[in-house]
Length: 346
Image 1 (cartoon, rainbow, N blue to C red):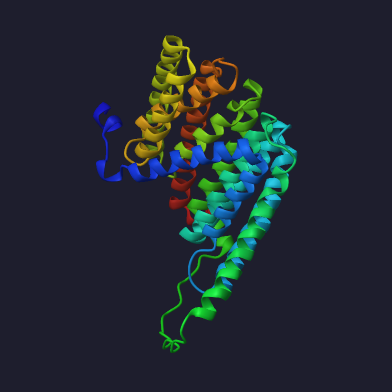
Image 2: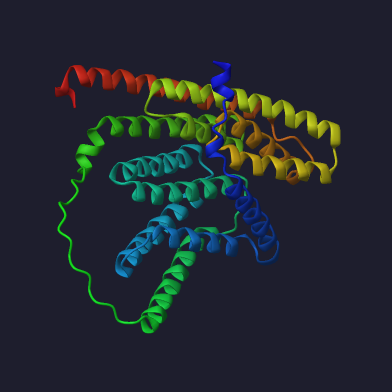
């Protein structure tokens, strides 16, 4: 069992992605110091909206980008004004989680766009729970999305003028893909899992707020989002990896901070941990959780006047997320088993 927990899939290592993420973080930190967090958020939103457009015909891309901009702006605004109340913040995150799950049921591309919006909502909620985000946060996504749309239109106009005329391609006759209807998707086994996960997200946020009002209110929800899988066995395995990795990370970070107690070495530890967390995310989740915990705790030691960021509460939040995930996966397994025996219950 232990060998499975620590086994590394070397083909899934992400060294290049880790380098890009670390570079992007450094650039964002520098820009935030120069121009403020609101402008940085708008720039990030512009990148997210541009990616959501996908490839293909310009009208389709602009349609995807417009929907992403409006939905992301509304969700960001709602998250901004809801972060002070635990149940409201939990409800907003639960709704975003549910919609993302439905989007994945429609297509991988739609699910990817939904996941980007979920990350945006979570970032706004975390920032507001710590009173770090200004009022500009509420309109940052709308501004960034609008800028991205304008730039894509301008680029399309310029490239169209310069491109030589091409013969229209012959239409290809293909059978249309059968799309799952919304009602069918909601009633499916995936829909059951998605509904249970969304409800438990609300519970996790409320419990998190009862423990602390800093970043930790969402630590349990983040654990739940990642660990809670449709399969009970997979959920338990990933929960074991997350729990062991977080506990080891807390012990290591606490020891390193106590040993050094100086900014320079702690910055190095934080950078190495961040790089390693991204690199190992798909290769081994236990190592990822270990490195992520080191990165988070060292970051908050640097940011919050050299004080430890409630390491015990972080472990408790992890246990809350793990317990909720395993309980939810067990409930989903029970429901789907009964539905398989009696199809009339669907």
